[in-house]
Length: 377
Image (cartoon, rainbow, N blue to C red; front, side, top):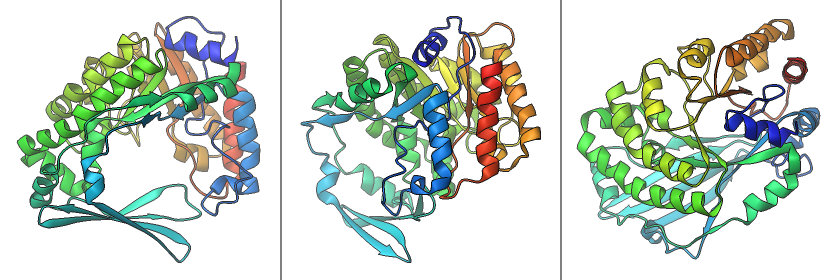
């Protein structure tokens, strides 16, 4: 089978010659070793062998987020000011939003040797901030979907992989406005107000998802954000209220147009698996093993494998720190449990990607061992 055929068969619950293997964020398309931008960690020579391995051996899944052309401006844009500045080599972005009589501020930092953005100050800090934010007119979806990047990427991939459309859900948009402690207190104690915030984002995201799913049908999707309502942050009844109720329409639109909706949720899963199935999703990642999560892959496969394609469950910390002879056992266990008995399909995949500038020799060896074992499986 070609790599594309293997992935599409897995999504459709059809037989495959071997389980697909994906390196998640790494895809060999978006990592450019020749880009001299000081914030591009992939320019370090240590990354080149892993990028080559990804291009040549993995069943590539490339994330894309289609843009919207000719859309009506978001009302919040006219109230927003952004300042970018550099200090000690790091890039800071300060955002200020005029909300009635209040000014809401956030601050992020991006370090050149770390491929992530840290939020140092969150936009909403108390209930009055939230009420002021809700008084700003919401964004209304309009315009047309620009499919060029999706089509261009698929042509580049050829038979080596597929594009995955990527979107946050209403909970992701809402929760990320707060510090984690403030978010959990607000979501628990101000549920009526929090629903207003979720509905604000849902109106736009539901319409956008429908438009994108119609414009580029039949693709894999990843919906991220549900983990904000998993344990220990919120109880299952609020996962139902804040995730199932708002993500179900997104899943419906994706499936209506022949796509495949996958829920992304790190951490604890056991008490929300039934609710994830309730969304109608056909896939789940990254199903982290106990330590980071609270359920074995074997349990998920046995109880939910007929409804869900399972993506996982190699822990990124193991890839980066575990001696290869021990990590080999983790790979074998994931392959065995992910394919045991009857199930829709399984994709061997890490929970995340290394984000430091220098890739260690151990990390590279563990990625190489992953390919070696899955090809021999």
